[in-house]
Every structure is written in C-alpha cells, then in structure tokens.
Length: 629
Image (cartoon, rainbow, N blue to C red; front, side):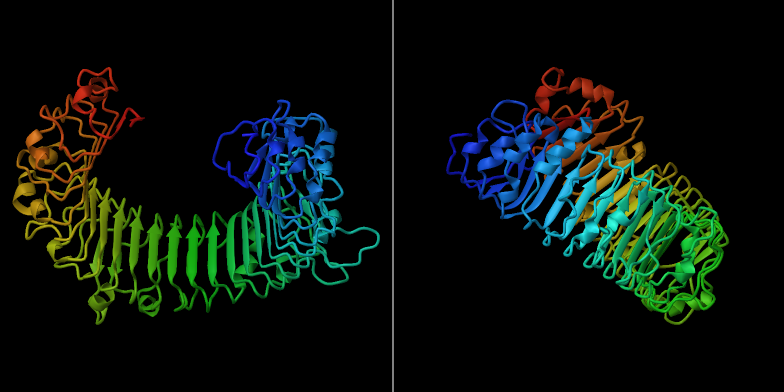
C-alpha cells in the first residue's frame, strides 16, 4: 500500500480492518480517506495522518485508544486539514484509559474551523477540551456525542452559531444539564442555540435535571423544530417553556415533571404554538395537557395510564393509541375528517367509534385494531368511504364481520386492497354471499379457531395477488362453489386440520393459476401429499416452502418433476422426512434450504453425507443454517 503514492481515493468503509498498513503517510496525494484505524505498530499510528493535507469530505479516526503519547495526536495536524467537512473521533467501546491522556489526545486533535459535522464516540475523558463549543467553529451544523461515559458535563455547544442538529446519547455520568450547556459565563452576550433545529437526548440514564430558563435575549432554542427525549428515566423538572418553532415532540420512557415538587414551569405554561406532531410513551403523564394542542396533525400515545378520553381535533391525520388501559372514549364530536391512519393497540376499555360517525371519516385509508375495543362484537364492513387497509388482530370478543345494509357500502369496499384477520377466537363467519371487494389484493386469515368458512366465490376476486390461510382448525373446505382467485401470485396455507384433502384436487384448481409464483404449506401433511401425488402444483411456481410436516417421510418425485420453473425450495422442521426424491430435484433449482430436518441434514451434509452428490450441483445450498456456495 505504501507504494501507491499517487492514490487519490481510498474507501475502507464496510471492512473489518484492524489497523492501517504501515507508512500510510507516504500517500500524500490522498483526497478521500473514509477511515483511519489507529494501529499499535510502528508506522501505523496517528502520526501518519500528518501528510494528508489534501483530504476532503468525511474522515473517521477509529481506535484512538491506541494513541500511546498524546503528542502524536498533535502531529496528525488536524487543524490544517481545511477541506475536511465531516469528522468522527472514536475510541474502543470497551477500552478504559487514563482520562487525562484521553482528553489531551482530543485536545490536540482540534480540527479546522471549516468543519461542518463532528461525531465523538466512546470518549473516556471526564470533560471536553476547550475547543469543543468554541464559537470560532462557525460552520458546524451537526454534532453527535455518543457513549462518552465518563463525562460529568456537556460542552458549551450553545455557542456554535450554525449548529442545526445535536444528538447526545448514553452519557451515563451526566446528572445535570445546566448553564454550561448554553455556553454562558460571566459575560453572556449572545442567544444560545440560535440556529438549532433538532435536539435529541437518548438513553441518559442518570440525567436528573435540565436547567431550561431563558435568557435576556429570548428563548434558548428560538428555531428548534424537533425535540426527542428517549429513555431518560430519572429526569425531573420541566421542559423548556418557550419553543415557538417546535413542530415535533417525542418523549419516551421519561418521568418528566414527576418529582412531587411544585415547579415554576408547568405544562400549562408551555408555549408550543407550532406543535404538529406529538408522541408520548411511558410515564410523562403531566405532558398530557399538550393533547389540547389544536394544530396537531400526528398524535401517538403509548404506555400511558392516566388518559381516559381524547379532546376534539380539527387537523389530525395520524392517530396511534397503544397500551392505554384507562382510555375509554374517543372525542365527543368524533374524529376529524382529515384522519388518514388510525391504530388502536391494547386499549381494551376503549369503545369503538359510534356507527353514525364512521361514514364521516372520508379520508381514512388505514385502520388497525389489535387487542382492543372489547365491547365490539361485529365489525361493520363498508362503513368507511375510502378505507384501503384493514387489520383486525387479537380481538377475542369479535364474533363476526358484517356488511352494512346501507347505500354506498358496496362502493366503499371498492377501495379496500388489504384485509387481515388474526387471533379472533370467537369469530365464526364472514358476510354471506360474495365479498364485494373488487380491488382486494391481499387477504389473510389466521388463528381464528371457530371460523368455519371463508367468504363465498373467492374466484371472483380477480385483483387478489396474495392469499394466506393458517391455523383454522374448524375450516373444512373453501372455494367449493368455485376455484381460487385466478391471478394469485402467493398462496400460503397451514394447520387447517379438518380441511378435506379431496377438496384440494376437486375445487382449488391450482394448475390453472398461471400467475402463481410462490406456494407455502405449513403443518398440513395430507394436503401436500395430495398435491404431489396428483401433480396439482402449477408449472409457473418458482418458490416452494414446506414447513412443520411431522408425518411426511418422503417427497414424491412425480409431484415435483414437472415444476420446470422452480428456483427455490425451502424445507423446514420436517422431523420424519427421510430423503429427497430418488431421481433428483428439478434441474431449474438454484437454491435449496434445509433446516431443522435432522434426517435430511445428516444425509445431505456438505461432502460427508451419503447423498451429498445428488444435490451438489445446485448453485446455493443451506443445510442446518450453514450456507454452501
């Protein structure tokens, strides 16, 4: 490498290089070097960076724990690399070192003031050098401080006039963020964070206090648009009271305000007049007053106990409610017509929307109800004018899905393209007659143990591309009055124990499905045996997945031999399957995967199995989680 003295660009990203080759410093013409991994060997240390005067763009300096003498860092001459725009300093994640030396190293790595983005990871000093936060770095727009575990305080980055994005995470010794963060001293003259638009604090496990009071020049964060607090469990006190430009607020797994003391700032005095997106998760009950913000377009409430009802909204577009056990009702006036997405998850006490309100949700495209709305016994299909996606999962009291007998119901269903029912144990039936969903492309039903039949005339669903049916123990047959949808590309069926094998050949019409490309069968041995014995799988099939067939002992060559387009074959968890077809698999096969099939794994093991030669021609094979190419 050292002989490539005219090399301009060296990209080592994505490699596992342990240290740089010796005498890298001879490559004086380098313009691009994505990473420099500091080595312990003579000639691979940080001094080698000295001659790289023409470096441009981004540089990551890794394994700085290998710097033995801090004076070597000064020889790297970082201050004079004027064309570097992004710089990362990183120490080893698990390496402890002398904090004074570590600080001295970072101090001597002071970059040029032209820098635009700075990242520091796994820094082991107890505080930061003076240059970090100096206002002379007037071009820095983005800064990430991560895993600086021994630091007691943050640098005065509030002084950086161009800083737009700041992320601070996993600084476990920081307990207070105070005036030093804003860059204040005895002669405080400028407004801190005058350009900051995005601020993130993540996994600050010991952080207790945030000093947020504004200064004489107005709010501390005059342009902040996005604030994220994630996993700061000990945080007490208040948020900044005035964030005039804040549009997005996310508070997750924090106990903000929960200190039992009266504070000068309460949520009622928060001035977030521009707030559009609010996400609250875990604790944070006192922030619930922000739910009254009228301009909200996105609202997500997760793992919050003390919310019982929601206020009225005029502009809401996305609403997510998850694990709110005391939430019992929607707004009195219903949800706004602007709503496009509604997710209700683990809100068992919540009453579903009144029937008369549903047609008013003219913009609703996505609806998911999971383990919620225990009082709902029947879901009214056709009530939503523009619904495209409907998921109903884990609703243990739901008994049926009915088609409302009102004008416009059939037309409303013409927009539906994804329909899913999962874990509804009391659900018995779908609406009688055809399912009037001409544009339905995905339909899945699973773990509905009392469901006895699927919608009639499935073959009329000509837009259906994907059909999944699994764990329906009382389903005896389907498509008996017609065949499967003619344009299916993916079909999965499994664990339907009462499904009559005779109906497979008589009614399914698999061979006529000229578009079917993927077929998956799970735990239905008798069905697969019929399909193979009677050669019922279509020749267009390119992927076949066979799972959890406990009694299957062999694969019928006759049933696979005609599959001239088969490229991928997956066989998983078939404990009694002894061998593959004696006369071999289709020659078109390019990928074979065998996992959790002890007999097959032993028989076809790489090079040592007795029948390895019969499959060795397949380009890619996976046996027992080991890929053989």
